[in-house]
Image (cartoon, rainbow, N blue to C red):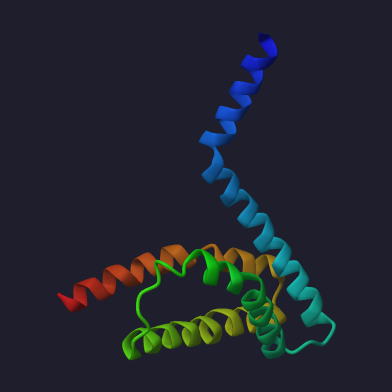
Length: 135
């Protein structure tokens, strides 16, 4: 009876802490990616080439999941939706990845990691500014 109670407590803790554990693993994965990136940049790899490799690998790994798991919920591909996807992809690759890796080339992986953790707050401030302008 004691083992079952203990296992139930551990199971309920994991179930209740799922979001926290995902965020913690995301932070460790992000920090590991910055260390690997900094090592590759120090060994002479161009940050543009690294961005291309990173996006190719992400497409190969995540593409099948998106195709099979989301095929019934996808909206119809229109010119507007396609152009929005392309604009967001372009901005993400140029502004986020290229500038992050360029900055990392000139500073350190810890600095880049700290700066990337400030992105949600900057996004929030920009959302407030643009909401005030648009109304």
